[in-house]
Image (cartoon, rainbow, N blue to C red):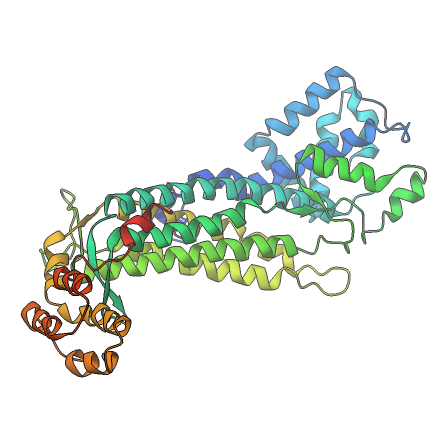
Length: 457
């Protein structure tokens, strides 16, 4: 049994097994193939920049045919070609050097072979890797942002639908001033959108400046070339990244840490939503649509469990554990470089994969929830004591004696009914308009501006 074929049923982890279909969009980005593909693109972009630089006459300008050959290599790298890179790596025991040798093989028999010595010219491995990783993260984030927007839109639609649905709030888990279901969901929409804006504002930094970040080899060969400007053109104009002008051998990964922290914050808000929806289901405020053929329990036929929100919560925990570890670990590197970041960076796809599974689960769950108006109304009807707040507040306005203390004595820890409260209100020496407003108030109508606040989403 030690030689099982690699397929979803035999995968070591759930992202390549049980959840393989859910994370399929990330596979071409964060797989070994995805990394090799991006490395090839970075090497080709650097070669092109060298060939276009007048101060480097030995790097001959590219012909249209040569440009087309490089375009094909950069955009259409096949799995067989990526496998060839791995075969070369088996000899070099160095993954980036294998890219260089692979390109030389591809150039063999073409006029590009005259540029062989300008492949990976003056570069350290991290010049290639940090750009490749930044591009992978940008592509992966685009996939996650699509899924995040879908969650936000689904949640916003549910908030609008339940804009006026009165609900007993539960501060500390206890009956509190009423609100609406829509307003409470709108809070999460607003929170998620705030974190989304911070994710969208991120532009990852990158570097192409040699073995210790000083352009040492570059200047030794071509002292008249403006190497920082040449590097900047590749990073910013070609790839849309942001040049970091001061680095060691590695780009320090602070930008990655900021991205991972921002992503973890978005996830934390979603996890908070998952738990609240779970609680509303537990209270009976929300129900769940049944799916033909689904089973909620292997022994209790009646069960309809909030499994989508539980799945999301679990996967968000795994995602954040990885994101937070990477955010804390990656910016720390001994002196000018150690290799502890390399193996950690290979797990970026796992973190993004757990995120994607979670987002899909939450959205699926939101699509199945139904509001239970009868349960909501029943809880409100049995919580007349929550009107102690408006009564004592209006009494304060009228300068009546000890309003808070009187209502505390009357209601704290006790169940009230409509008749008792209305009798108390009738006994108060209040302006007629205030008394009339209090007498017409019910737990279901005491929701303040909750409905209108949904419109602020």
